[in-house]
Length: 83
Image (cartoon, rainbow, N blue to C red):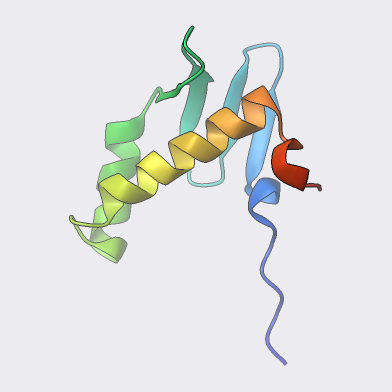
């Protein structure tokens, strides 16, 4: 029997005092005034992902995580997602 994967939201920690979402990978996401996510350490996480996922995939993975982090900060329950 294969272990169940963790829901994607469980990989995020929200620090309300700093208004930052931190992913298990270490990516730290804040919101810009326009509501888009911006990473404090995006280049570091791309470099971390490259050996395992390749140079062509790592930046796209970080962009996806940016969107997830912004979603968690804006409204983690949008589109019916639940814990």
